[in-house]
Image: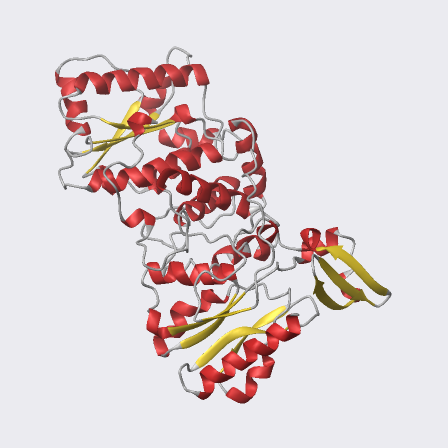
Length: 314
Length: 159
């Protein structure tokens, strides 16, 4: 199944490169372990065999687009969540429609290393991983183990409602069964919430991996780095970390496409998506807007309606 | 000046909340001005920052205030339709409404954050708002701080 899709991705990439429609195809390549992949940048048709497709293709490659499109049209292999990131970049005019070719791939979930560890897999022993229906087959030195996908995938994938590309020039593969929307977890009373987040943000080591990996964090100068207005100091104290993460949650409001890459990249396992998801839900409730669905739509905070929710009725 | 204010808030040993008021120049600040010139009584716990328009209010201002330990923040602007710049308050409304929800999500009590419309003629309303908010915050108690440590140092800074 995944080999078939892989072959199709390669064919499409080859077509794009041979016809000269794109100067580069961004996709995933073989990683340093069977449960890892790495972004690859293919500029010759004969190199397309370096492209792979498997449940380890985690990186949201849209993160490269704003830079790469400056020098010509780019082809991008994109999971459904990645296509939503592309849509947001289009909405915000960071890329032009004619400068991208999107090879969309239907997705049945991406594995998460921490989840695999929790499922009792010794990652050093893994030789091969493969999706089989709703399960993940993990071949280790001592035999093959079956792990249900729900226990092996990223949390963002487990609750993902968009499993087919929302925006693509070609779509490869068919969507697996739709997932029932899951309500956002109730985090309890204000004290409980504050205590929870204080405990999470306290661990942050300010590596900014969450920002670097995020396709929506393209600002030339991030508010965290500004010295003229010091929104936050560089000191990783709990209060300063709170400011960093609150600023990020705020700046991603109506823009986060919930790919879960920030959470995956976080070396301290801070559950950033819990906050992003809550904010996404607020935006949907207040303004009936879901990030990254319609390339023609204007950004939600760049416009208003006279009958928007008002503090006096709230 | 700073010392004097610290004294003011702790003179009688009672704890008094400190509120940051971010007020639009054209309506709410004029409203606060009217409250003053009409000799209306309201507690001295509010520190006012004047901005040209509620649309100028970067939600980060509010986050920063809570990070620094303010007990409450109020953002006041012109009523919809009354904006001096025609639509600044409409843009503000979207942002600040979302900010309010975000603050609730991370456990800042909704009573600590007020977003309201106050026109230049509503001096009475301004005084009422400050009175009400002070009362609620006195009941609620001091803000424990975003890192749950109630860091007195940063609190002293704002006083």
